[in-house]
Length: 243
Ligand SMILES: CC(C)(COP(=O)(O)OP(=O)(O)OC[C@H]1O[C@@H](n2cnc3c(N)ncnc32)[C@H](O)[C@@H]1OP(=O)(O)O)[C@@H](O)C(=O)NCCC(=O)NCCS
Image (cartoon, rainbow, N blue to C red):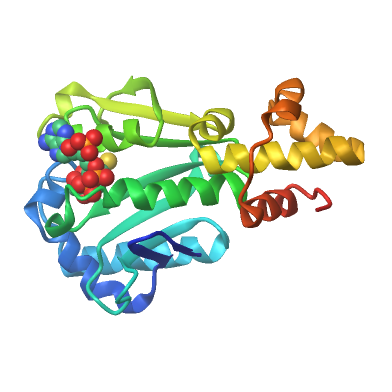
């Protein structure tokens, strides 16, 4: 996987990221709501090994790192996953994040996650994306909110690890395709344009596909919004619509 944002390059994990990932995991602030002890080098090497193996199973999902867009050889900005949900469900993947403390508070987690959501809803064709965090992890909950994810429930912290705030439980959050379309102006515009084309061409299968996305046919015809041609083409291609 390779994605670009204004400030970041997001790429699949490499075996050569081992030391950089261990450095990221060695900050007390990073581990505060994750586990009560810093992982050893051996534990991190074993995690990396598992993640690389998982990445080989799914080309468009998995564990990724973000590096500065202007200098991809600079130290890692963060680590993320967009991995299959429970029971290996690739169409309802789970998003997770972990950033180097030196870059917190600059909107980088949100920026990277927005790109991962776009990837999930276009390339992977996910119907929803979920995330979880300890209720006490307010920064993570803020990232969820900024992404348009709604908190859908709570569960107990089941690990024996006595992480601070575990007694408040774990918040579960989700964003569905329709909500994502509504909160993402570029994509909404792109779909409107795609729909206008499908109406003009009277392409039944394209219209049916767009209808399944909940598009409002009557409104679309009068909107006249301009779209990003790249995004339209990508969406159309991803859904097998002639463009
Ligand atoms: C969670 C984390 C990824 C956020 O990264 P970030 O790049 O600082 O995130 P962003 O800048 O995109 O957004 C952070 C938001 O949280 C808010 N925030 C940060 N710390 C906060 C706190 N202690 N309490 C409440 N809100 C907080 C910020 O103000 C910002 O919201 P705003 O811009 O609307 O004001 C980062 O703190 C981190 O890596 N934490 C450790 C690992 C972790 O806990 N991962 C999640 C496990 S589920």
